[in-house]
Length: 65
Image (tube, rainbow, N blue to C red; front, side, top):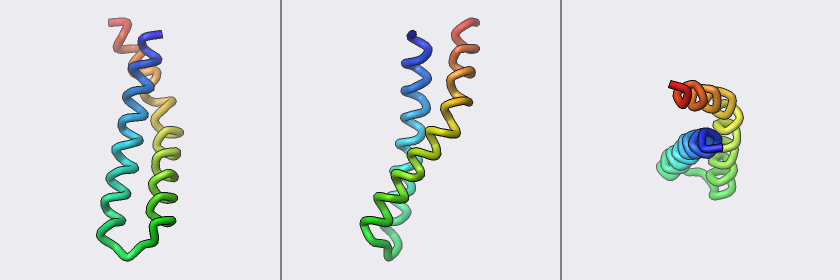
C-alpha cells in the first residue's frame, strides 16, 4: 500500500511539473488560453501514461532492499 502511494506521488508530481513547464513555455508565445490549457492537460495525461508503468516497478524494487 505504501509503495503505491509513493509511486503515485512521484509520477503525478513529475507529470504536473511537465505540464507546468509546458504552460510556462507557451506563455512566451502567441497562443490562446484554450491551446495552453489543452496542451498542458495533454502533456499531463501522456506523462502519466508513460511514467506509470515505469515508476511503479521501480518504487517496488527499491522498497524490497
